[in-house]
Image (cartoon, rainbow, N blue to C red; front, top):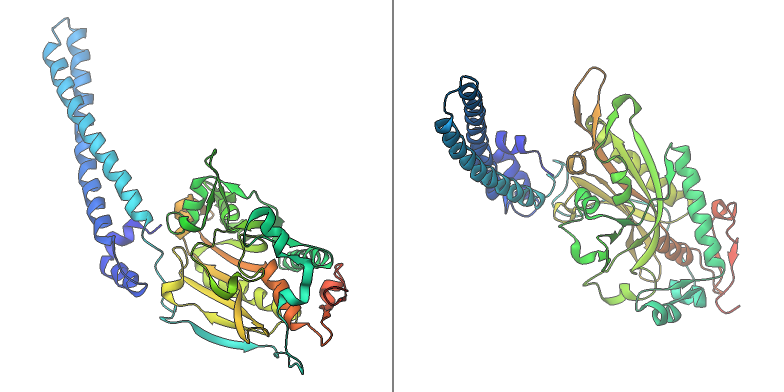
Length: 417
């Protein structure tokens, strides 16, 4: 959520920033409602002061034995006007909150107008055979047919050696993040509406979110939602920052509107597992922390031996909360192109304001902090990249030594063996 004080003091700069990310629709209405609210507040305060004075006059009249009828009538009139004005104020505040929630975060000055490739890393594999895609390599170890029979399209059973690969991948990632001082967390995956609103997924992406029919709960599309809310309505001591968490959870997305080649296999499914990084830092450290998260994502991809590129994401594709976002895209031989594997966003104080998360410096007043998130491992997509880049001519797959050390098989046998 944007800072109303900044909207008042720098309306032209805010408008220009919003125009950079596609338009400032709704800004004028927010400014109008804020002015209306601010004009109503002193009027209501004046009426309440009149109420207090009338009450004192009534008490004084009764104490002296005089009639208080005139004062009582005056108080009733003031009370009625105050009630009407209070209802008008509450309506303006509710409409203001709703209008303000629709405005996205202001983009970073360095966020580009178009997706910009910053670097390509790693050596793409060169095969003397036609590379297979992940479904051909996995065979029934990725069981789409039975998954669809059970739950519908875009669900799958993960079976056999691929289960051990996933568990090894998650274990290895969490251990690596522990070296970077991230606390491992397994969060709830059912959350209230406030958590989604607080992270900016509502009202922006409601078409992608699963909602329970009989409870006011939603299935998360990322553990970012639960990790951000871990300190909702809290004041954190500044000297304890940064706080860093690594959340592992299943994630659920409706993937409304997606179609085409991505619907084959497990690249774009309704349920997947993910390890997510989340940081709470002082606002002045947010840009440095963002680069730190990106560096960790690159370390993971490099250690796994996956060729990748880093993309500075265009302003109009940042999502509501992010001021700047970097994606890491892994090379998929079967598609002969890079595909998104991880993403990291600096959300500045946007989420903290919505979730009322503040910090207090020594001797100071509470102030907003910054939050950042980054994908450590999107398990399904990482398995795709490992299978396709590690494939051999006979259909077997050689896996990275770091995962073998955590329980993954050194070699996946060809499908059907």
